[in-house]
Amino acid sequence: MPSSLSTTEQFRQLVARAVAAKRSYEVCSVLQETLGDEKFEDVMRRYSSFFNSTLNANFITIVMALTALYDEKYLSLPALLREMRTADQLDENVKVEIESRIQQITTPLGKLCGIRHRVFAHISNKIADASAVFEGVTMDEVKDVIDKTWDSVDQIRKSIGEPPYIPQESSEENTRAILRDLLDHRKYQLAHPEQFLFSA
Image (cartoon, rainbow, N blue to C red; front, side, top):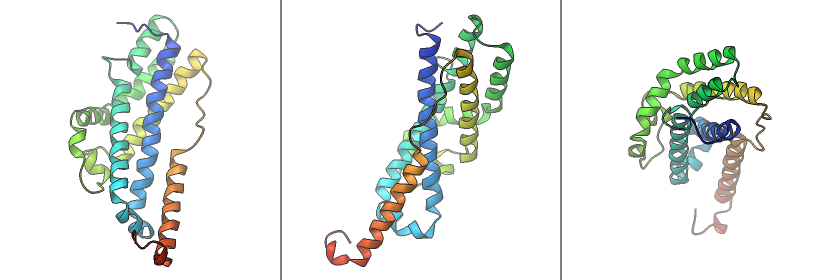
């Protein structure tokens, strides 16, 4: 059934989901990379509860945002494509390209949809590897879904005359900055234990 929202309103809602998935992927990617970095070992262990909660929250956001983008029962990319085609708002070649792109990510999307129904069961008491949480869906596959989604979003954007999405800040850069600040603080804390008698 056609949406009561305009094409532009539907598009902007889809962009919001794509943004959420991209930002959460950036956070997870940096944290996963940091898990293997010896210089952050003490920081990651000391604040393991925070990092575990952060990873789990962002894993859940990725799963929910990406699956919602392609769930045809609701406002989704495939549903918007159908409406735009019916309203003659989308060039046929563009539609074919987007549908081909969706077909290419069918397998990882299927896995993500399966995870969506049981993702909360994966919250554990330790920092988990992304491959375990995603049950066979690798971070590279997740990145591919996100990249192809943004390629499709950009084509639709141009078709309806929306301005390009320009992020005001980078989640990746912010996460790296937080890690650096925590590392610097921990080094200072260890060098001046007398100032941190109750938190060393």
